[in-house]
Amino acid sequence: MKLKDKVAIVTGGGRGIGRAIALGYAKEGADLVLISRTKSEIEAVADEIRSFGRYAISIVTDISEESDVNNMVEEAYAYYKHVDVLVNNAGILDKDLFEIKDLELSRWNKIIGINLTGTFLCSRAVIRKMISQNRGCIINISSGLGKRGRAGYNAYSASKSGVDRLTEILADECRKYNIAVNSLEPGGATKTRMLERTDPARAPKGGILSPERMVPPAIFLATQDSNSLTGTFIVANEWNAK
Image (tube, rainbow, N blue to C red; front, side):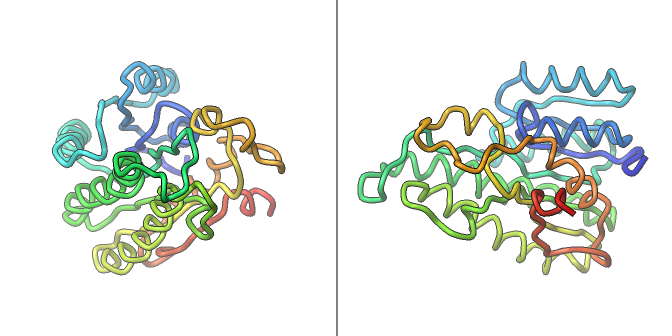
């Protein structure tokens, strides 16, 4: 088992990509901390993980709130005594598209708050703990829209571009602590609740990828350290095509 007895925090772990990665990690021997704002979803995934003979706890957390994140990390460490992997997966996309001239500040702040600020808060809280371990791995779930913006996806594209730059910064800052920080991008539209809620007219023309395609590269990245691979961007669709 590639992740035997490792502990991983997965944000947005109740469905879609987060659920797929959490279950994939458990099958490789990891124990999980599942994070979401919806208790029923993460507890259902926790039950699946326990059926594999692994440990799992679910913690309701709003990752855009500093106190929520700090309390979640303290609870995770109190339960497991260490955390080896953080997957910053939680993200939101506005159901409706607005040009910037029509975009309300509240909508902008909500998306930036979850996608970018949430990634920052979770990373900061976990890094402070990982330093004493002298090891750790952070995986930030990115998007192709972080590389090239599209009309109407303004806040989402900006947030994911920010996540990519944050990955590079954290990799540089954390190298001396033996903490690897990498980014994982689906490489195409992925079957998630977020995609299902969008306008059908915005449906991708090239097909929809399964969240399970994210699992093999996510497992690979979870085994890295600062001397092997850090500050790198992996595209899951290209990974699975090899």
